[in-house]
Length: 474
Image 1 (cartoon, rainbow, N blue to C red):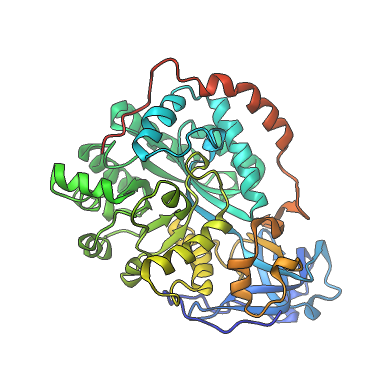
Image 2: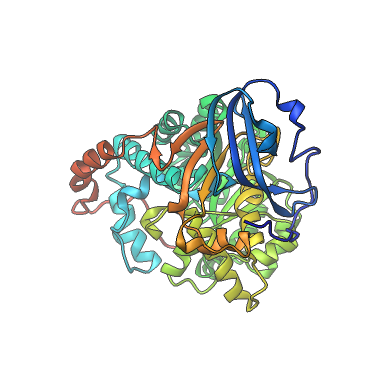
C-alpha cells in the first residue's frame, strides 16, 4: 500500500511529537506491540497521512510510540499482533445513538417521522424495563465493537444499565439520561444525578452529559435550568435540535425563532453542547453557532435522513466554515437499522457531494478526519482519542485490506472510505485492551443476549395498552 497524498482538513491544532518516538524510547517492556501495519497519522496541520511498515507500542492503556516495525524487533511485550496487510485506524466514534433501541430494529418501517414516533416507537418505549435496556445495550455494543467503533455517545433511558454494560464490555462512552419536561422537575434532576454518579467511571472510559430530549419536548425554562446545571457542574449537554427542516419551520411559525435560537436564548449555547442531526440548521443560525460561548458540535447520521426522506442534510460545509466540528453518527437502529459508523462515514461523503453539487467535497480524507479528530472533539475527547499518537489512549482498530473488494489500492483513503466495510475490521482495541481479535468478540456473549431478548420481545413490542411516552408535535 502506498501512502496517499495529504489533504488539509479544517483544524490546525496538534501536539508536539505526535507521531513517532525513537527506537531507544521503545526499550522498556510493552503491554502490546502491533507490527507491520500501515498507520493513519495526523501531521502538525492535521492533514492525514499513512505511515507504512509501522509499529504501535502501547503501555498502560496509552499509545507510547508509533515507529517502524524494525525498531520494535525483539522488544519484550505481554502481547503482540502481527498486522501485516492491515491498516491501523483510530477507533471509530459513534457521536449520537440510542444503543438500547437495537431491540426495536425493523419494528417501525417506511413511516414518516410523526407516525414513527407516535404510532410505534413511543408506545413501545413505554414498556421498557431496565433489563430490556441492558440487553439492547449489550447487543449494540457487540455490533459496534465488530464494526470498529470504540466510543459512542448515548442518550436514552435507564442509563445506569448502559453504564454497567460499557464498564463490563470495555468500550468508551459519553452517556446521558434523557428527559422530557412532561416528567416534571424529576426528569431533569434524574439526568443530573446520573451524570454526577457515573462521571469518569469505568477507569475514565465513561464520561457523562445532561440530556434534555429536544426543544420541542423540553420547555425553555427547563433548557435554561439545564444550562445553569451544566455550567455549575462542568457537564456538557447532549440533545436533539433542528433535527429536520420541518421542525425549524414549525418553530418559526409557532414561536418566531428557530430551534438553534432557542438554544441560544436559553443559554445552552454557552455550555459545551453536542447537537444531534441539525439538518434543519438554516443560514440565520450560523452566526449564533459561530459565537457560542461553549464548545459546540453537531453529529450527523445520514442514513436515517435518507430513510425518512428529509429534504435536507447536516450542512457540514457551512459548519466547517464557522469552525463547528461535525462528528459521524448512526442514530438508533430503530430509525436506520444499523449502528455501522463505517457506512455513515461513506454516506456522509456521498450525501455531501450530492447536496453541494461538488464531487470535490467531501473527500475521503476529509471523511476520515470527521470520523477521527472531529468526532473525538464532538464528544469532548479531543485530547484523549481520535488519533494514534503518543499520549493518546490506545483506542484503535485494525482493518484487513487483503480482500478482493479492497484491491488494488491506488488511494488508501478512498479504499478505506468507499471500498472497505465494517466486516473488514479484524481487531478492536480500547485502552490497550483487545475487545475483538480476528473477528472474535472477547467481552460479550451475543447468543445469550439474543436468546433472552427474543423471549422478552412480545411484552416489549405490545402496543395494545394505548400508552405513549410523549406526543411528537413540533
